[in-house]
Length: 454
Image 1 (cartoon, helix red, strand yellow):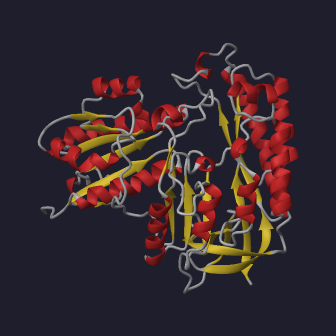
Image 2 (cartoon, rainbow, N blue to C red):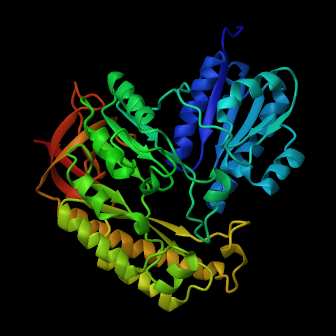
């Protein structure tokens, strides 16, 4: 049977920024005449093979990089059986010259390579590929900020909205400033216009995205009243949009988290009571070597200030083990910090050197076996604390936004509280994504809550 429409698939690795980029790439492909569908790989059935696959890569950690390269390598056999198929690679990984050269030289089945700064040029790049050219085009810095690009949103009831791009912090372990560029902020009116349109299309929750949302407003002109836009003023403006139920944001840098921001969050009824504040380590010595710009004492003082203003807030974090020079004493400081902070959840990582960062050249790199032992011990403490925090919710009634049926158990619904906790409860007809329901919590674990509608 002859196809009537070209099919494409977009595969994203890594953070929410990449997920949002995937939506834009899907929208651009649709505008080019592609039907963006899930990949179906039934052996020998050529009708299920897409005409185009684009991988959006991540290089923040070695594991994400290896997963992306592994997936691209698996495309070789598929391309051999389907020589007309187009394979593209985008995202942060290809912003690194060494990785880009590896792809160009060692992966000849890849037809298109483009970076984080020229996604808007995809239609023109793809046209060249369709004419038979192998296209490698990666900009080292953004030439412009393009608004109003098409997008195919992953969900109707919730959406990611970029507010900043890039990062100026240059933490010693982090590759992001080198691959995403310097900090740039979108105009307030452009952000508000996008959110209003999303709400008109049925969206009920937005997540404001940036590598460091606290930096929002840098480089923007003053507002009509003469004040300089910042993240607090943006939150207040988004909070005024009728029809929007919930506002989330990620990620915030603890060093830049101001009292004005706390006041704006506490005073905005639509802003969810959930803050993600990456601590990274509990040792002041390690934090200084990381270039984080705060001490553990200052971080815990920030948590105290936040919780005084919002007693129902949930605080999550990022924690890293095995940073160069980390001793057992340093690691014990991290374990104690988890217990002192009483995090609702934590994303835990093993340090992996990123070429081009200062930490990659530091002496005293930690042995891999030691890293493995420490990450296991850290996860145990994190889960114990999270389970204890969640146990306090048993017997309470929580407002939950419906996401849909649970992927693991279709007899149960799944959704999120305002504190971003996942809740499961018995499914019933008539519940649609985006609806708000009250759930009485009956059971609590480290990762999820279970209950019944009340």
